[in-house]
Image (cartoon, rainbow, N blue to C red; front, side, top):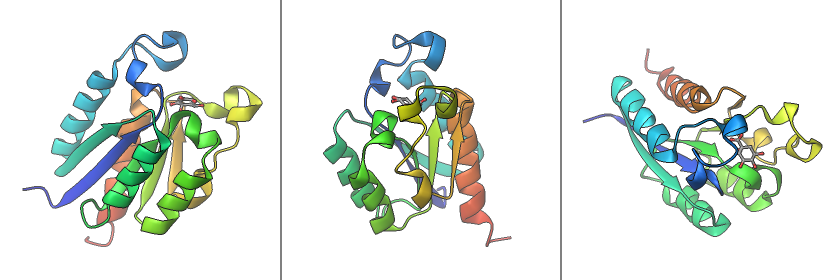
Length: 150
Ligand code: DQA
């Protein structure tokens, strides 16, 4: 039984991965990404729970619900990254170590993507490595959670 449990949250439009702007987001589907996260979690002896929603409130409820259930969160908030004070406040409120990830490099794109409301309240951000952003984010979070154990 893995000792760590991690919640991976995918925000709006990420259910369309594979079809959605493949030149930017790649050809893997969300199911492919979730499968790879599960495999990586198993390697690192952590349970990975995934949730995608197009609704801000559902994502916020999941952040609240992670208290007592998960030890950390990996989040790709999609467009809510650039708009949501509510998700930022939720992350601050539960005070669980969180890593922000993006498939694309948000700083190479339109100006409105350059600001993340979430970045100031997370441990760190990984942006621009496609699926590797998620896997690196998961590794970084697990390393962070276990660093006091060694
Ligand atoms: C994204 C980048 C966001 O700007 C965009 O709104 C997304 C996906 C990414 O993973 O690169 O939906 O978070």
